[in-house]
Length: 440
Image (cartoon, rainbow, N blue to C red; front, side):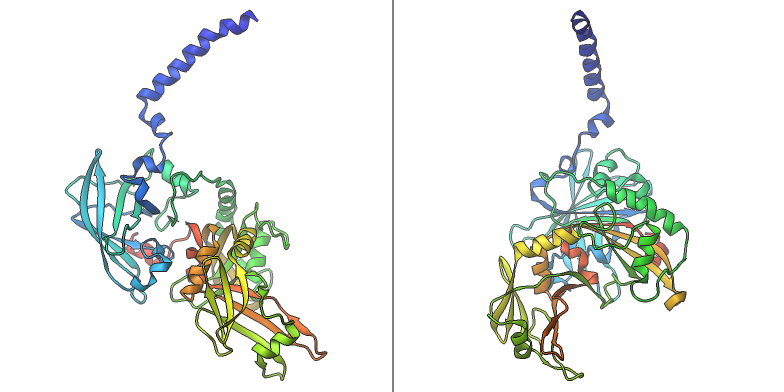
């Protein structure tokens, strides 16, 4: 018992020394900082965008290229009507605890050009040694007429505080390179941080695979890219609903499938609606369908927010998405059902892109890009249905025997709109040749 009491003064002295170190060591203090400690008005901020660059920030103004996959930072899905308009912005900087206001201009993408944010630099020293990080924070608009406000924070990637923002996006200092970005389109200071261990473990293996250059396909056809990637990652083919790699879903794609000019679509998940018409599929297919080129009675139809040639249309509502036929609601998906399906299959997803050459059995892949996405929501899916970026495909027909054959009802999305489905989007690996040519 006496030894316990003898140790008390030593413990007290140790704690006192630690307290003194924390009081005099600015880096130790910074370890406890959060993003909200650095924001001017954290209660008004509703989105964050982190960009990595290699050029100096200097001069009276400079232009920031906004990656295509992060355009929704300044134009949320519900504000798509203003997508083509140039917008003046009020920009705030901080230097030594003082605030400086300047002006900026948001120019959305026109045809093949990137969206840009041109920022006027106030009369303060903003020379940051490259590589640098730029944190943009978008203010929540209090009314539709109020001018948008964006905070700008420029800091060196080697500065201690950079760890705080990098950790928020699951990145490390070693991940910083031109073109890397992180988007949090629904930032909340009270939301706890997430564990990015699975992402970092994937990137370790991905870097090894990417360093090998072009790899011959292990299977011909459209599924060759996914099968080759999973084999290189030592993943066996499976239908595991919990994800492919440490609980993370992997989806691979060729080339520029995520560019704004791409018309490619991808499957999100299969989910049958709750039918309201009281019919069986055998009765439903002839009523809503048609006779195809093979003489079958079929219903292979893509439903969007606009009524199609078969009279089918999607109607997003507050708590559900309806399927209507000639204006009559015939089926529904509740948001909570869609949310459950999204969480089951797409809670965490890494989209891996590869440059390809050759075709068929001679096709080769160079895996180069990795886009990490987290926290999809049914509300975002409904928004994308409203804007026409998400859709539902009905796939059924009547067999020769007279029985109905249903291949499953698929929710699909334009690949280039995919980031808008998620709260967190991080381009972990991959820089376009154009960005490298521009020195960004």
